[in-house]
Image (cartoon, rainbow, N blue to C red):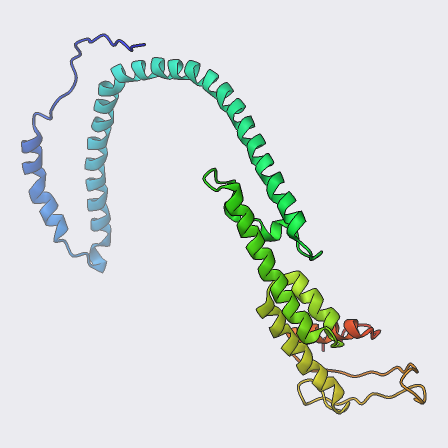
Length: 270
């Protein structure tokens, strides 16, 4: 297939015949305006001068656009016809692309199914989802299934190791449930250990004098409503804490983990 274009002779603008004369005639005026210092008394005259220069530019631009239209007229007609041909060719290309895309999507889904099956076989922690360990690059055609399976296995192994380490350290701790939930949420041992430090620090405060606040400057002692005879009896009390939002959330988590019933009382703004 060959595109044959017939050549015609057109009389097109090819040069500005008085370019040098125009440049020479306006240069002194432009030089004058370039060195012009505008004073407060001369603001109005400066605006008139600017308007004059803008009009010169507008006239030149008008002519440029006319010349461009004349020069592009032959090309515009050819471009329109070429676009029509391209549209005809694009139609079957689109149909073929859609079918090829369907095959690609099928192949990609099969690849994902293999990886998910491998994950299911390898995973022993119920809080880890397939998406947690699926490599971001798995859709790349150059990424082989076997190497992706190896990467998934490595991520699972690291998570199992981190979880086992936390179990060995805190499985017998009363804080274990909160620690477990934190790791299940973040899948990050460093973040979880930082959380443990906060929990232990909070636990230390709560085991201290009930007359101390979290920040050390409050002050309402717990008043039992029932005489305490042993640890199994239930008492009710109230206390107020002064602490950061993060610390308050940690306090809430600790009480939930310990099975302590509580309700939030909002203070009225003065």
